Length: 250
Image 1 (tube, rainbow, N blue to C red):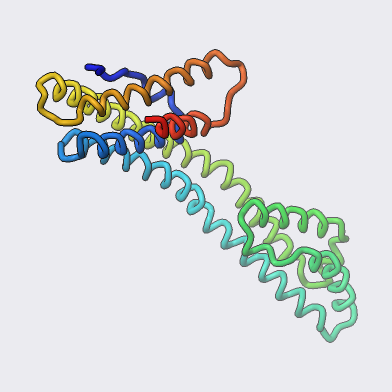
Image 2 (image 1 turned 30 degrees about the vertical axis):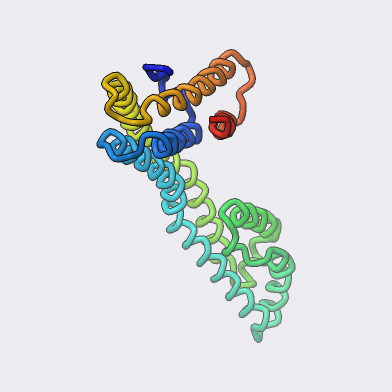
């Protein structure tokens, strides 16, 4: 029976790997020595905060673009409505020009309900194709201002996705790093507590918990070491998957 728990730096783990490690630690303690002690509660709270930061990073990245997307959606819808009106305009020249525009516009189904990658890929293609028409045709069809509004909205969304999301990512990464550091501190306290309880024989199951944690950690350290020596960078969830595989053997 081991009396101490192997140590390693959390900053060696990617966020998916740390999430898997945190969950497995909680499972091991729950199955061996229980959860009715304060250091467990602190580690569990730190682990949940870490998970929430991962979720917030993804959610906020989407939310920060919502207002820009709404402008683009409205611009597309406005142009669509105007084009339909121009197609039935009483003036023949307007109808003829609208038919030319519609021949291109109608090839792109309503993109406003698609995910951002698909929507803006479609919109950029549409704008490129419409730009091949003479400016006078767009003007005669009464959609030239709508075309410009849609182009500006797509450009604004694209710029926002680069600048705003980059800034948000830096902020969220800082919060995520802080949450990871809190997890690490809580983990060290938890490890010290288990070692103390084993030494004074005060917590039934602490020895089994330490043994299982060491099996888990040794597997992680072995794989992290192999990764650091390899020129190829494996997928970010490889260690996470191996943590699960290692756990199945405990």
